[in-house]
Image 1 (tube, rainbow, N blue to C red):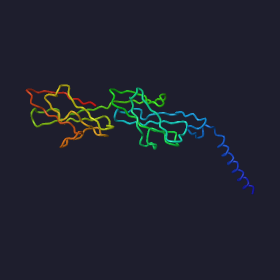
Image 2: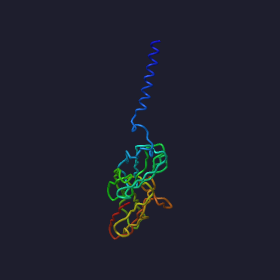
Image 3: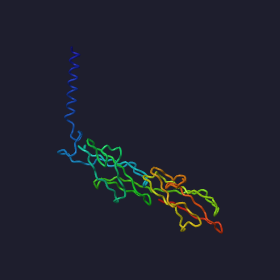
Image 4: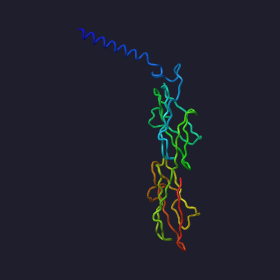
Amino acid sequence: MTRRRTSIRAKLILGFLVVLAIFILPPTARAQTCGSPGVTTQVTNFSVSPSTIIAWSGVATGTITLNCTEPSNTTFALSSNPAGSLLFRADPSNPCGGICIPAGSSTGTFQVYSGQVAQSTTYQATSDGIIQAPVTVNPLIATLSISPSTLVGSSNQTALASVTLNGPMLQADYVTVACPYPGCYPFAESNQYIQIPTGATTCTAPHQPAQASDCITITAGQVPQSTSQTFFSYY
């Protein structure tokens, strides 16, 4: 009987401690709803990962966290410094379907990307015009290779000019292959522009009929003596 009373007493004491723990928690430790009386909505975290991306190729994920939970899907404003240097879009994994914080949550995600830059540059992603997260953007580089590098003029020989990017194309776009001399004499290109498909890093082998994503074919006209020309590519 004594052992049973002791067990009951222990359970009562434990129950009291649990109830006591629930009721004496400080307000900051309890879930707060944004917009409730006495609750001032504040951003507690604003970050972008990874913090370095390749222009028009890499996509980073941004995260914003509040000190309270939103009662409904709530959009939030984003900007960049300098203005327009960074671009934002909805994160497909975000259940609210936009640049927003889902109902019942204190955290929202979004995606960050950038247009082309001339050199590695660090910008600032900004929320509410105050809280910032740095994002470094490296240029999208198109490397050109031509094979073979020597042709016989006025022959049926051709060279293939291929372009390779340092990152997958975020959305299909064109890379230019050119030379400093007008007309690239004595050479001729099948095309001056190559469309790199979405998600790809290089052009495709030539098709019949030709396609926009085909690598460029180069031919050579007749020359009185050995002549060279320099080709380059850029995005």
